[in-house]
Image 1 (cartoon, helix red, strand yellow):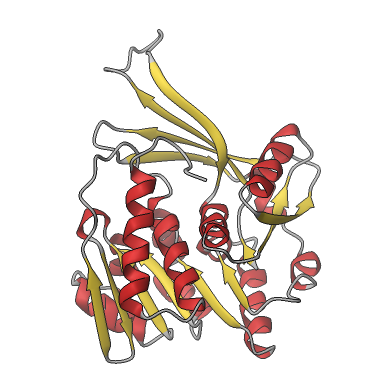
Image 2: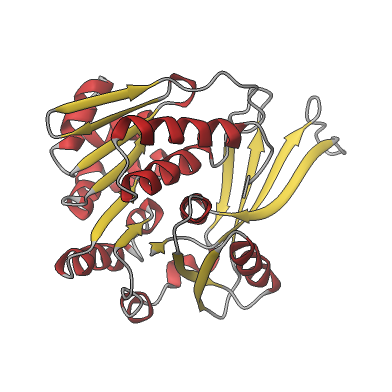
Length: 286
C-alpha cells in the first residue's frame, strides 16, 4: 500500500529562450504525476500488487490519473473531495534539471478514516514524504506508519522535497518517520534532514533513525546504509532529457527488489537501471 499525493504532471521543456509576453515553442507532456504514484508504478512494474491511496478532486483530472494508474497495474483507491485534483507544472532546463510549480488541490483533504481503513491485506506500507511535510496530513501520515508497525507490517517513507522540509524543520520530519524499515532521500534532502554538509555523516545519522536508508545522488548513483554496513552504486551514463520522477523510479525499484528478498547489491543495480530509464524520457515513464 502506497499513501501519497494524487497529481497531474504538466512537464514543459522550452525550446530556446523564453519570450516574455509572447509565445515560446516547447515540448509539453501531460500525464499522471506525483512522487508516490511514480513510486507505486515502479513497484507494480517489478511485479508487486500495489494499492495506491490518496485524495482526488471531483474533476476530469481525477479520472485521468485513476485510469493511468490502472494502466500501470496499480489499484487506485481515491478519496474524492469537492475541489480540484492536484497539479504540478515542471519546467525543465536544457540539462534536464527542473523547477516545479505545485497546486496540491485535494491532497490536503485526505480523510484519515478512509486511509487507515485501507491498511489491510498488505505486507508493506509506504508513506510519501509530501504527506509528512504538509501540516494538514502529517498527523495522519504518522498514524498510518504507527498503525502499520503495530500490525506487524514493514514500512517505508521518502523525503520528497527539500524546500518544504526546510520550512517544516528537520526535527519534525525525523520524529514523524523514526522507526520506518526503509527511508529514501536524495543527497540535498539527506543533508538538510541530518543537519550536516557531509553526505557520509548524513547516511550515518539517518541509519540511526530507520532500518535501511538509501540516498540517491543523480548521476553519482546512490548509497545505502543498514546498521554499520554500507553499499554504493554508480549511476548509469545516459543522455539526460528530464530528471522528473527519476529518484522515485529508482527508489521504487530498489524497494521492490528488497521486498522480493534480493540482496542490497542487486537491488541497487536495479535502482540505477530504473533511474536511467526515467531520465531518458520527458515526463513519466510508466
